[in-house]
Image (cartoon, rainbow, N blue to C red; front, side, top):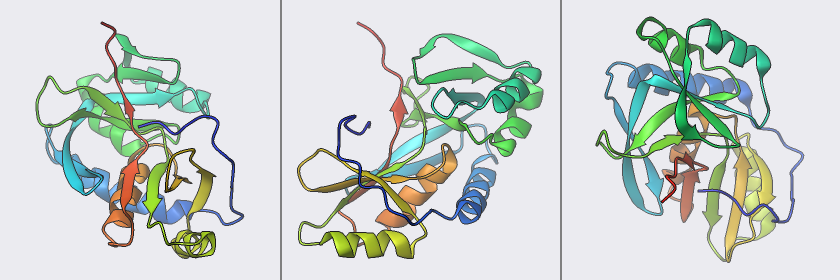
Length: 203
């Protein structure tokens, strides 16, 4: 799900807590890495949707380009997948010996790769960063700002969609999924879902 590119910028002065997010992300990823077909979930509205970790794949993003992370990935022998990706993302296949080490290292610009659902045919998904949230219609901007700031997060912008929709800033990768799920599970939001990149196939 991608935010509208022309939405109003309403950046807050507070900052997300990168140490906390990295710790949460590392714990979540370590749990996922216990199995080559580890499954987790995210919330799409009120529905939990399954995604399956692909430990042999890694996504790197051109936004916030990180040459050092890309060089480190290339040094493992990772090979970009042909016909997968776009102007935003490159998907790499990791050599078997590098799969776990590379995923655990989680370069700042990159993301684990998932498949939608639990089928090998599910489309590929990655996490370029950010969480899309919808607050209750009677929440004021002051209430929204207080809720976000209390959790050490930052509003990246208000989205040009009907209702109290905002994009919250997170690093790329597992932090986006972990944060989205934690926010939804407070029970205070109508929607909290990662800002997914999803592979699309031309027809």
